[in-house]
Amino acid sequence: MPDTKFLEAARAEGRVRVALVSHEGDVLLRISQPPDLTLSELMPIVDNFGLVISDEWAKDNVDGEGAIDTFRVARVPGLTLEQVVERSARLTAGLEAVFEKKMASDPLNKLVLRGNLTWEEVDLARALVGYAKQIKLAHLMSKVQEILVNQSAAVAALIGLFHAKFDPKVSSDRAAAIGLAAAAVEEELSRIPTVDEDFVLRFLLNLIEASLRTNFYRTDRIFHYISFKVDHAKIRHIPLPRMMVEIYVHHYEMEGLHIRGGPIARGGQRYSDRADFRTEILGLVTTQM
Image (cartoon, rainbow, N blue to C red; front, side, top):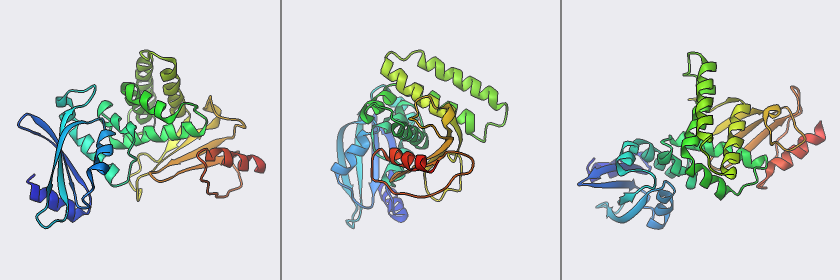
């Protein structure tokens, strides 16, 4: 797309537009942005997708409103540049989701390219990690992120199992689909070289196995968020006291929980600024049982 039309499209939509193109032997990431974000704001976002940039140049619009930043992609660890170009649609959609504040900017975004996942699937992995941390997965978040990026094939297999279990497009034998996906997960896990990596990935596997339903496939959400309901009886590492079911909600700006001790339960809402807010909520539920 010519520069003028590329920038005009971004301005008309009032949002950042991203494209990845091959040009004269180079792979170029182009970001057209009406708000004229600084390089210091752009580079951490680009870096979190695993792109190694060799140089950058900017082209301002003639009327001074907006600019097009062009980044020359030197490499992406673990991939060829040809593979990066093949996965460009997922990369550009993921970057735009970050700019639109639908998804966080953190190292898990490397899974878009490394795992060949959509940004929504990466955010699903992020939601599973968020809930895992609430039920006391002890590993540092930075360590968990490192493990998932390094074992991107296993993460992709886990997401495949989630799809087999819940995707409404699975219209044939769902039990057979789940069986095949579970076998693919176990095959990937059999290759895991360290105890830490195996523990974290099996922790997430257990959460998928314990999940009862999800909103992930709904198309009528007014904004992007992910929720899933889990059966406490099926979660191995959940802190006591063990209740009946729980709903976890993940959004770019917040997290939430709804814990039920039985089919009929008292309700209430509470805001918490604690990192381990589930501990507070579980205490409140326990006093009402």
